[in-house]
Image (cartoon, rainbow, N blue to C red; front, side):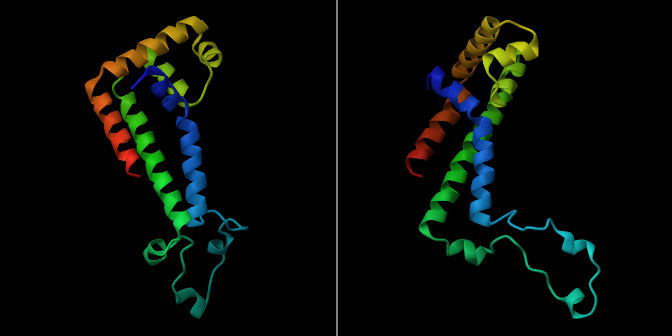
Length: 157
């Protein structure tokens, strides 16, 4: 695994989170209602009150019968979720406080200039800290093994 792959993976973290939300809305049909659950605030009487309420999400039977496109979307969601978990687990491997702050800012998608302004350090110091951080992650055996597993698993998805 090279430095650029790790840097791109960390920088794309927020993008992947947003993409997962978008894909889940496409697949599961979440959030498509025009009125945001005003029906729960109205008292129901008679048969309407005792009848079971339907769910907006797809049932297990419907998920089994998804078409090919939706299956691909589910696989993409799974791959993105694994990458997000990988990035979040890597955060625990960072010990230095400044490196943790830079890592969190990178995960939010901030530029070097924005990170430097936020932390009150120069852009060059941000770059050095980022390089030290990525070197630390590359030297960590657990991190590299997890990355190899994801790459191997990605080939079969």
